[in-house]
Image (cartoon, rainbow, N blue to C red; front, top):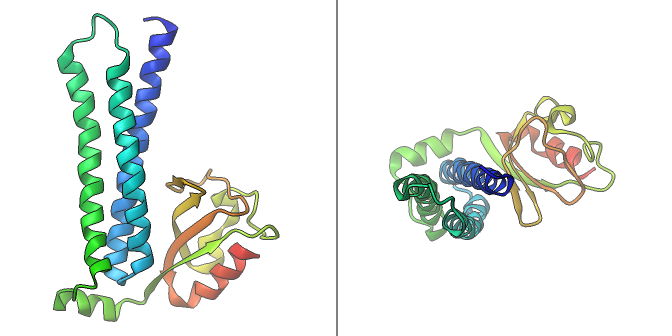
Length: 192
């Protein structure tokens, strides 16, 4: 395999991981939107759906763009199908978010869960003077300091599934969930 072909397949692998991570992130946010009846989380899911559609088309084009002559068509179909699965998961997440955005009355069991939930979801923008600016999520210790767990980080048009090594920069939007007592601490820590 030539180095160009290797680079091509490495990029396809990266794209597939991005599709998988994005669809998982969407599902996490969609369920949180539903359980917390949060329209702002549902809006985030819908924005991610648009991005997911673009990522999926790009992925399919890349898979089909340049292949080795010895590549079997059924091998390409398998790779494309994996991408299609992530797209279906993303579509399901957006359908869940649409329930919240339509304002449909949740089932009475879900209403009881929502009423009894002590959890909340909040978003805050990392400020220039924030103590967490320039730190990794691990070093920022957001959960330890506030009781709020980071669900997602949005950096401009880029959505980041949080990892301990994720760096935080001014302007990043952090969406976190946790107990309502930690909301104000979370906002102050993140915004600075």
